Picture 1 (tube, helix red, strand yellow):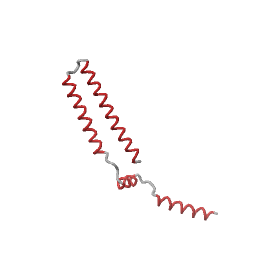
Picture 2 (spheres, helix red, strand yellow):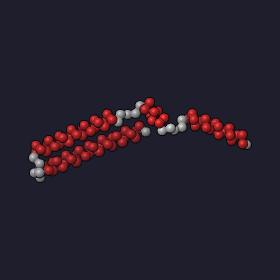
Picture 3 (cartoon, one colour):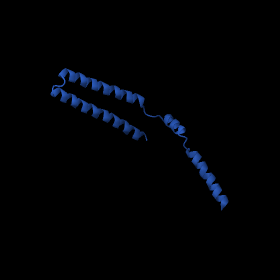
Picture 4 (tube, one colour):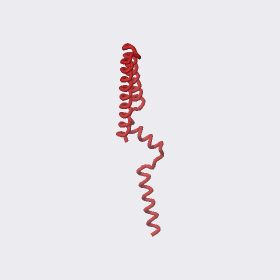
Length: 101
């Protein structure tokens, strides 16, 4: 499960990088067409890069890897049966099946 979360996180980073590349291409295109000055293009490109870096830092701080304790707490909140509880139920079922035979 941790690998899947890591992959999702990396996909998000990849998407952000791709978006930055496309935005940078658009800025370059606008500069070539004369819609933006070279200085404006550089400034806009730097703002885009800074914004990407900030968002990436926010994401890495917000979504830290889960510890073993975090995972236990999460599973506890989900109210799932534990291995011991399932084993106990199996034993009880075996007893009931043996009585009815």
